[in-house]
Length: 419
Image (cartoon, rainbow, N blue to C red; front, top):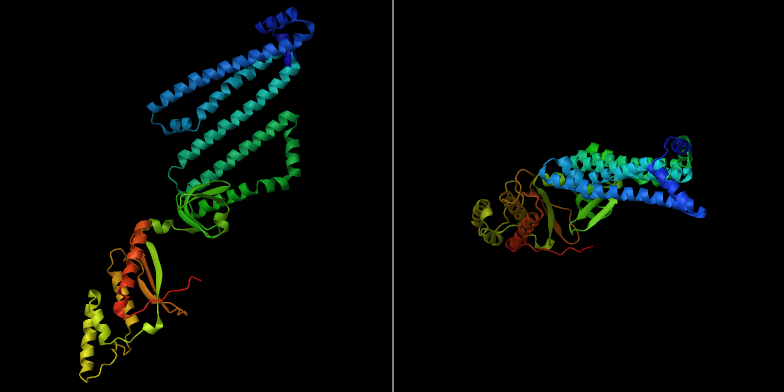
């Protein structure tokens, strides 16, 4: 109010004075104050509308017309994130804020209310401007989708939250005429409630730093989260939540802190190595297991991969047949050779000669623990591509072939109970 009084003494015979006294001389006494305030408020509103139209119709259009002619990524992103729009919104507000004391110095109470309103609006729009600037910086620096991006987004979200909180503190102090010391004393008294309210942002900030430092996950990685039954690509990691696009194109959101607090499988290393593990088993009926004899050998000679191996065994059979009695075939260690054993040997050779199987990784065919359903034989290898479709094709072709040749070994597959 003192400012308004001082301005009243300093500014005499201005247009506002003439308007003020014109209304006082030509309107009834009971309505003079109302019309003085109303006309001045209308004048201030008209100035604001004219300035706002100027910035929207001229300034912003000029910027948008000029931007396509430049390849500067910063300027283009400023337009995309409405930074110039936020900045130009400050111009009419700032000019009207400066005009309030010049127009309303005759009315100290109205001057105080309008000064309060424009101060709060300026703070809100200034905060909005800074938040848009942070968005621009984050987007430009996040182009590489590296592990540093996680920390960058975490810090940017934190800074935006702090700007909002700081703005709220100042607005409260302006509205209730409180000092900063009183506000912080009040915050200290309700600190437990504040920590409860901002628990997720605090945990997300810790998680973001941990993820960036350990290089566990970044945007674009293919991950699975067993706790939530999720499997897909990471679309965004921010201060509170992480978005995951599932294979069916749905998007799931989980707390960012769960990325370090629960089990998360990251398949990105597998995808970058361009290989993917195949680990699947076939279960055979125990009753179909036989020692290798001449009848089985005749079927297996049709398989090219086993020709050299079987020629050696055929010679052994002929030597044994000189006594007119067919003995089961023995290997070099005098162990009896079985049809399931030759099947494992064949599968190993088939994998080693298959161009779809990676030769630089482990290739193994092994027996698992017997079950009540039969004897599982597991194939353990890696496809030569991590592409999902090609991987599934490789796996399907591999087991379709193995199932198709089992009759040559006189082996019988069993169905395993889904439980």
